[in-house]
Length: 476
Ligand SMILES: [Zn+2]
Image 1 (cartoon, rainbow, N blue to C red):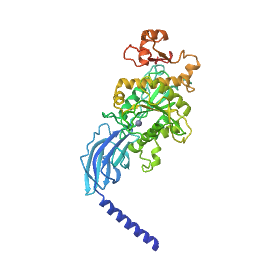
Image 2: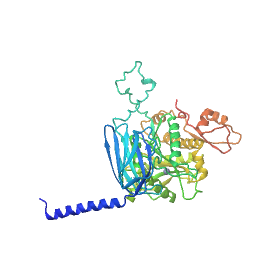
Image 3: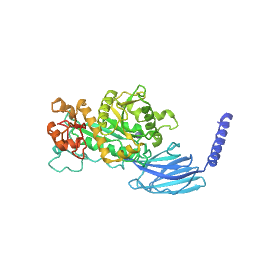
């Protein structure tokens, strides 16, 4: 039985609901001005750009599969045109259900699992409604079967009944060293931008892909990317990918921006639980961490200022093995110094609390200032991207030749004395030619060219060349 007090509270609640409804009607003047779409390997993100805050609800319908998005307090400001190729979406329709309630219906090829949230305005965008359409697991394409190596291909045809050819485990103690390369930003979050429209998210993905190609060309190494296209991965998701892939090293690739257009040079960051070693580090940490706020992590409260710290660097600090990070960072930095000016001569550290036991050495490479017109055009040039990637892969290789994780092919090489000679540095003397240097170090001119990303054989006196380790110069 309902007591007087409860009845009173029910009445207050009812009045509250009424009041809320009136309030929503009073502010029902937001417009949906555009929709943007990003396709990731396992989900499709729709971002509706709004002129103000809205309430919304999302539900699915079957036979045929549809997704309904009710946006309360909004009208359509412009037609919702978006390219839906390679997505589960076949069409997008909208109708004004009441003067203030807009319904968007998305026709689907197959069912999806939706997840939605609102984002408040920030420096780049206004109010947004984000709807993520996750592919249902059963629909996802099966992963491609691993390509068997020659030794494991059976002589007789394999019936396709078995899901995949069972590969014997890699010989004990000869696994590849795994480097997970993280191209910063992506999708909704463009990162920094250059004066001619260069976008950090595009440039860093190109460098990351080139770096992956180069590392995969080094025997005993395998590189994986956190993102393979133009879509956003929450920052914490990136380190999770690294952990899932069993990373021995995590390398996050970025391009800097600074209030001063004159700022230039590359830098390498590792994590610290001590104070930031420079103001730049602090500024960078803030701007890179803003990423989740822009891209929308979905599961974090975006009002919570502390959550802004839940970014790349904080995450890296949770996983970084600091000594190794500083070591590999220094090697990468000195290699980068040969192809582009450095912003700082030593590995910088950004000051965040280490929250968890470190387990993956991690570095963040700022490849240059995209806010500097000269560096922006260099960063967009494929020759410079190759040179940057080469300097990073050289640094990574040098680090692991000196510090091979136990059980890896590189450790086996070292222990069995097969590393005849690790990589060395050669400073070009007057009168020396590429051919002479190649003979002296018993490597081919082609190997020298490739290791140093040379497009011609012309050398400058004083130029530094990397002489690759003889055993590890290339895949056999
Ligand atoms: Zn960045």
